[in-house]
Length: 244
Image (cartoon, rainbow, N blue to C red):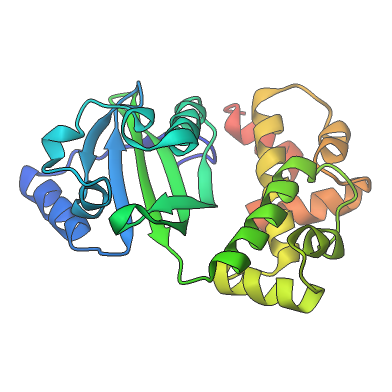
């Protein structure tokens, strides 16, 4: 079992199996897939990404950073993400702009994970899945998600997030279910629990303080939410990730 937030160990797969996996990734027209080294330089990219960058072959991308090949702030943002993921901060279904054929931009959900091999960090792997979501709706939802990740420690509610998106509560709920398969309340819980696992793993803050830092001002409510999501109480989770 891989601990939450820990780099994902790379299994020793036969060469033929690896070739089969990359062949499969190459035929996904609505998904960008890539592998990068510990500096964030491309080691592999599927055909969808090569096409969207208007490159002639994968060799034109290998060894380069995202900021070297994506225009303007997009590349800088992706490189910054890579640095954070390599430092142990998972990126999960992050709503963001991506390039489409012809240079247009569109919305996708991006997930990135650090990779390890033989007990050491070896790089990261990522997938970006296109969303069939009208641009105004995607932009509104992205604004709400930005506020969610920035203000989760505050007494934030679904109505607050809906206002950030410029949507009614019911419309906001429909969009989050459509994109994430979760209700806004479930999304808020996920972000708060993710933050809590990071604090429990990397700091010695008392559990009660962790609860407050993650937007729970009722210790019992925090424990219930955490146990429902993780399967362990906060104290037992901390002991587990520290080998206790």
